[in-house]
Image (cartoon, rainbow, N blue to C red; front, side):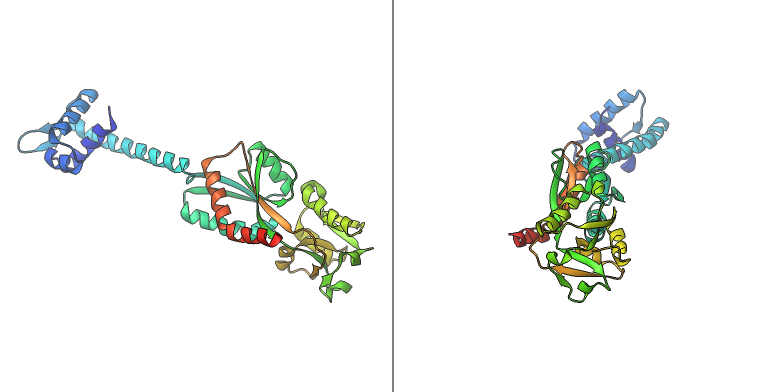
Length: 305
């Protein structure tokens, strides 16, 4: 039994006319008659009664028509879904992101991608960098927006998509809050609150490397795993902290972001995917995100040089 035979039969059931159907499906009338005869032989019963004046459905033809229409519709839906899946336009995306990416990157990218690919489902979670890496390695996460650097991870494909300056965050009552600029050497003897190394080792080491290069041995009074928590600790007077500028931009805490006058690295966020677990929808989203973020990313790389 061939699909073309079923399609021809269903077309005839709508027109009840062999000649008209042959014209609609661009087939000669003898070829159409051969298809119907072959279908009836396959089914084993007469489906259509035909004479010079008219064509009618037999009782068996009526029964076959209804089920055949449903089956053909389901098959066509299956073909459609298979093609959408192969083109990365159908599937489920599990995306992890750090808090900064959740404000600066993810909402707009997901919204724009969904407008073009409405049949893609999303699972979005705020996940710390180290956990994102573990989940990507295990195939439990499809895409991660994580804080860089992350060191060597050969199984991951990572591209920088966001860069911004670091600032010194101090309580509003701090003596440095008035000038709003600082040289790192001025931080000697200050208490610090810092990012917990276990949750983003590369980011932690970058911050402490910046301080070490400036000759500062920070006294860390408290550490935390989330940047909003660090800002709250700064506001409470437990110490100062070096953080990405966007973290303070969205905070309502009583803190001030001081521009750092020293020449230091930028804060970076990357998009990461596994090189082993790569469904078409993952590649489609990644390409879309890189394209949408491309202009700003190119500008940032130009600024770096």
